[in-house]
Length: 208
Image (cartoon, rainbow, N blue to C red; front, side):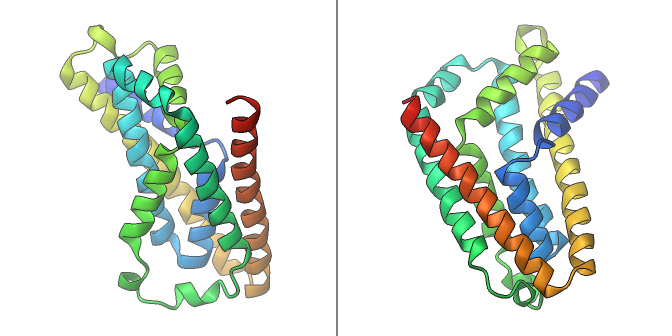
């Protein structure tokens, strides 16, 4: 059981760590709205990693095939989401106003749900997790239900640990930077997120 937990933590951390649109979203949210908002958003991504990890470990090929068959729709929705999000970030006027609002007014639940849906809308999230779990040689019929659940919990903890680290680093950096620099970072993050969304839509057109 301990081995399953450690393996899950390593998988979750490894899958979450590469820089992508979700990382940019969480960094921007941590910079503008504080570490709590960034971490809660990261928990949405960690929940998506948990679900995909359990699907991969259980070998639910029917669900994998279902998501793969709807890859076009999911990729289209995810690309549009990212473009909208990037434009919104690019046009943000004053990053300081969000941090002045009380925590209960920052829509933490919506931040969690939005990040979860954005992560799940990318078919590569599941397919990538299937590849990592298969490469690690875990899951499948050799794993007991208890070990599978512990593996999934480890994936969630590993992913959450990365988002906790990233949100704290970004939040710390946000306190060191002035409003003008935060606005520049917002614009850069927005442009990169839009680029990710456009790349997803272009790849959809080139490889329907």
